[in-house]
Image 1: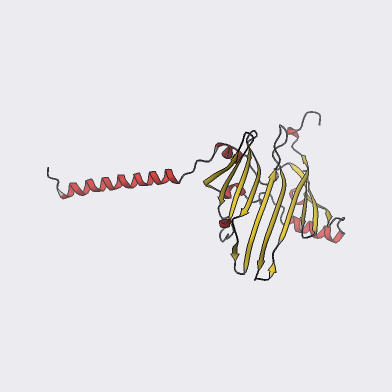
Image 2: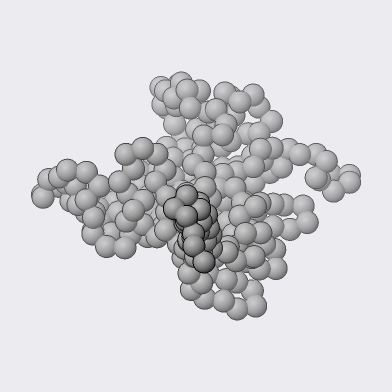
Length: 245
């Protein structure tokens, strides 16, 4: 059978197109990671900050200094925060005024980092699993342009299966790295823990503990630790309170 050149070119073009489509389909299937069901369910309802309508006390400790603050959800947005203690004592009037001015400039809601969106779900490793909890490990996507740290971190996520809740997220460095010129980080970790929900109380932040080890310009130590503890939660969402309270 004789095939003219024009017909041969058309046949070749169709075969080439079909091959491209097939290669794309296979690559897409291989590159797509199926997110484990328990992790997907937990991420849908996860939030890293305190939900609206909840008052709480926040205690921050670092390098021998501490502050105790109270966020009152019943007050206007720029008046919610009050400095209760500074370095273990009541604040002075000047410290209270300086605190109020500083807080009024940064009290807008919605500024908490969207940690769940930084989790790279294209490659997920199941580290541990039992009837109550599952542990997963994955990479992090850069938070913003110029982020040089996410590449060197891995996230370890613990999911409480019965409540579909994220109990903790730990960000841990995989080894020494240099995020910028003259700075070398030998170890970096941040552990965020959350309470388990009940019928009336959602999952709420409990602690954030950060530890850094490293040097700047080969002689200045960057070793430091930061601990933030959330406590004394109170809900202002009356519809969620039991009758008569």
